[in-house]
Structures are given as structure tokens and as C-alpha cells.
Image (cartoon, rainbow, N blue to C red; front, side, top):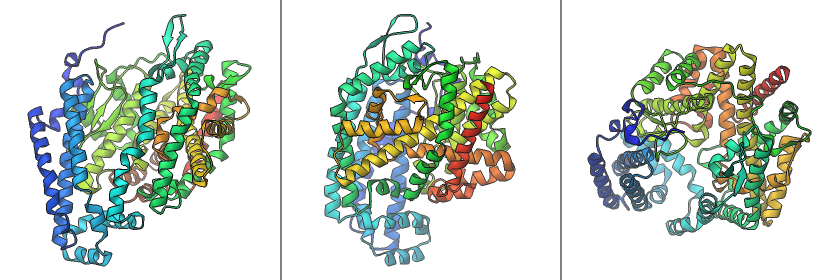
Length: 597
């Protein structure tokens, strides 16, 4: 096994050009000192924001200046750290960047309550008086929309002080899950002892050896079962803190509170669950195909992730991956492709793994500089899709930044996965269209179906679990390991159907999902996936007009609420149709797979 290269051994062309963001570490240190000077400057505005249109405008411009400087300091420090997590210099930079963000946030705590104390009629007069202030009208309207949920200045200070306590359940879970939880050893493919970890669990569950899968499954869930009472108490504590904030801020429910910031109607959440329920028969059919192809008398939960066909021997170099992605995204048009190539050719991407490099993949960056992508590229099809996915994020940021002024450039989480998944959808459709080999087609269909299963179905099941359990908490019902397991077991049986054996161990799966400590977040993966499937379909069907509509969304940033931006692109997420259309595609894919196997 070849040893990983050290960072300095990676060829420059395969590393991101961080100097485009910040010319040197010395320059970064200068920018940090400038930020420190901004902390005291906030006091110059305190108590004066309602005095004139000019003062309010100057403050909002100052906030933009601080925000942009914060981005540069924070993102540079952390991206440099991600090149090698063991680098003590950038560990120090990252800690300093985090500290200055906290100091600036504390210094700015007065501003929202103070602005909200200004009568809206006065704000309207200010907007008439000051042309520069009109840039911030949408921001001010969004802020005043939350006024009924804001408390007095003194109460807000008390609420702010509860923050550390409120995050305790999440912090304790992270410590348990990432540091303390151990899952023991099992016998691997060749009889060797393998320690089960979070990192290798997915690989073990994809093993063609069923005994390996079963052993890994039992080892993983034994640990969570052993600590079930403790984990149940953690989950309950997190639900209670959310219930507290929802009640004191006058929301009808914790769900409504979590959706409020992006102005997402609760009906969008409920419609997703209802639509997925309608298409559960297609999931049951897929489960039945899986049982048949694997040739087992009983299909267990440890049989869910193993590929239905051995991976097609597709060793794909990084250069070839760029070609495949470029061809797959051709329907987006020459202009989009030119920026995709710009990213490929101008070191937007940190390509290969090296010693100490952060795992996984992401797109990140700062306003005014091209986006960056972190990869750990391996020569397989999965990584080709990762490249398409992350460049979808990157070009979404590129177009939003290019089109929108700074206050409206950043897009909301609700739409964050749309552009990335749309790219994946265009790519897989292109590969399926060109595919002539039966085994390769089965492999591609299985891959795409499993994307649906993991996103549309699994994340919606998680969302339904959260809805049920947080409603139980709101009613004053006790949440403990036993009743959380009962809710989860029932949902698992509903989503997978009678052909699947819902092993006792799966009932505790809720206990290992970190996203549950950011409640009502995961549904956005499913809605984003559904929107992306709909949009990629429109692009292929309508051609230039479909792309033109999509670009209205891609360039929109947060200038409009997420639902409105998607409507511009031709997708209405308040209607079940988009979710149903995506699920109908899933059903068609399952039917085709059934005919081939």
C-alpha cells in the first residue's frame, strides 16, 4: 500500500490557489488586526441607529465591511488548516479567527433589538430619504417580520446567556459519538480483525460478504443500545431546549420556529412526508428486487447498502473525470461550461488526499474571490459525481456573488443542495443515455436509485421521526429510549415494507444521527433533491429556456426567499407536484432495473 504524500509533495496544479484570497500569512495577520479594531467601533453606533437615515445606513454598510473581513479571515484560516489538520500554525489561526467572530458578535448584540425599536413608519421615511439605504430594504423587512418573536432588550440578553447551556446536549452527543463511542472488532473479508469505526462502517456495509455486513451492523448498534438510556436523555434534552425557545418566542411549534428564518411554510414539510408516503410502494418494489438479486430468504437491514452488481471496472483518472463532468453538464450551455472550465484550469480545486488533509469534500470561499472546492479524489465513478456535485455548489456561489451585492449573495440552506444535485442529475442522465453495456447500466441505475433512497426516502423518514417526537415533547409526553425506539421501529417498517426484516437493532438508529441535534434540518436534503430532479428535467426538456429559468435561481443569492427563487426557475415547492414528479422518476428507474435483473 503506497503511503500518502505529504502536503508539500503534491504538485501545485492539483492544489487550490489560496493566494487568490489572501496573498500571504503576513497579510492575513494584518487583516486580523484590522478586525480587532472593529470591535470597539460598534460602540460608536449604539443608541444612535434610529437617529437618522444616514446613521442607520452607515451602520449597515459598516456591518457589511465587518462581515466581508470576517469571511476572509475565517475562511482563509480554516482552508489552510484543512490542507493539514496537524499544522499547529493554522490551528492557532483558526482559533484566533473563531475568537474574533465571537467578540464581534458580542459587540454587535445591541443592533437588532435597537433597529426593531424604531417604528416601521420611521424606517419607511428613512428609505424615502436615503437612496443608499434602499439597498437594505429587503433585509430590514425580513428583520421586522421577526419582530413578534423578539423579546425586550433585557430578555434578549438573558436568552443570549442561555446559549451555552442550550448547546450542552449537542456538545455531549458529539463528545460521546466522536470520541468515546467504541464499536469493537469484527472479522473482515479475509478473516483479519477489523475495528469498526464511523469512517469504515459504510465500507463494511457495502461488503459482498454478508457475514461481514451482519457483524458490523450488530457491533455498531450494540454500542448505541448499551448507552440507550443516556442517548435518550440527550435527545430529550435537545427537544426540550427547542420547545423552550419556541414557547418564549411565541411560535406555534418548534417546527414553525426552525422554518421561519427562510420563510418556509410548515405545509412544505408536511407535503414532503405525504408525497413520499404515496410512493412507498415503489420503495417496496425496490426492496423486493434487492431481496431477489441478493438471493436471500430474508432481507435484513444490513443488506440495504451492498451494491446489487459488483462495481463496474471504471478506473477514472482526474483528467477523465473533468471530461465526463463537462460532457454531462453540456445542456447547461456554453457560458456555464466556460466557468466550469475556468474552475478546472485556474486552481479552484484542491484535488488529492495528503497526510493530515481534512476528509470528505466541500465548496467554500469568500465574496469577491472565486469559490474553492476541497476534494480527496479517488479514481472511481463515485468521485466523478462528487466533482460534479461540488462544482455545482461552487458555480452557484460564483453566479450569486457575481450578480448580487454582498448583503444578498449568500443563499439559504433550503436551496443549498439544489444546484449540486441538479449537476449530479444531469450527469447520471447523460451517462445512462450513452450507456450500452448491460452491467454498467444496472450499476448506474442502482447508483441513482440509491441516491433517491438515501435522500428522498431516508431523510424524509428522519424528518417524520423528528416531527412526531418533537410533537410528543410539546404535549408533555416523556421522551426516553424505549418510546423513541418504538417510534423509529414503526417508521422503519412503514418505509421499507413487509419484505424487509426490521431487525431489533435498527430501532436505536435514531441515536447515531448527528443531524437530530440541529432539529428540522434534514428535510431540506429531500426537498432540495426533489427540486433538483425537477429542474434538471426542465433543462433537458426546454433547452435554452429551461437554462434561462434556472439561471434566475442560480444568480439570485438570497435576494428573494427560497420558495420564490425556485418559482422563478419553474418549480413550486409549496405544491406536492415537484416532489411527486421526482418520486415518479424513482418509480420508473425501479421498473427499468426490475426489467434488467
